[in-house]
Image 1 (spheres, rainbow, N blue to C red):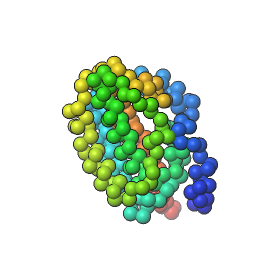
Image 2 (image 1 turned 120 degrees about the vertical axis):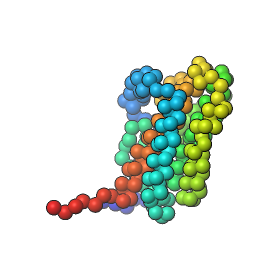
Image 3 (image 1 turned 135 degrees about the horizontal axis):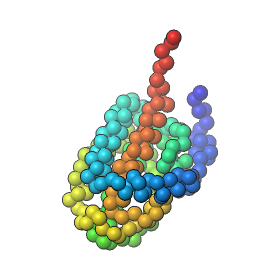
Image 4 (image 1 turned 45 degrees about the vertical axis):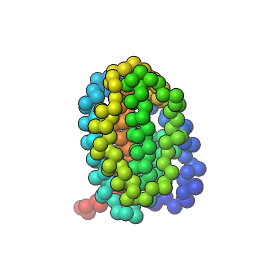
Length: 208
């Protein structure tokens, strides 16, 4: 059944931006994902993964009509996704991807050179404004994702530098761990985009 509530009513039913994720998500991130997933990954694997996931995001986005790309959709709760982020359009999702990946890249470079940025990571700061057109969001994300990893590789110093900046859910992150986050973050929003696509274009059931 379609949700007939207004945007304001749906937003009021969700937690405020920056409220974070459930405690069990944070515990899983800190004590399972951090040591056993991030700890066994590599810079090269994560760079390749970002390009692959970004390509899937673009393909799924392009499967939507121009009108559908700007239609806000409430998706079910998902791992790693704040409650306030569940009611976005596909275009808002791409805008958010640009904000976050560019922001992370700006942290990775100084951390790789032993410099801790004077910056506090706050989830509420990186929510999309919804000001981009559907085509603008696609054009900018496609262009950025095509060169992001190569440009970052040119700019970084020591990939294994020990300088760290606090991630509010995972704890202190080094340059390599923040670099991993670029791909992990993309996976979270690929899953969200696929939920949006499913809601907008539900699969047709074959009659028996």
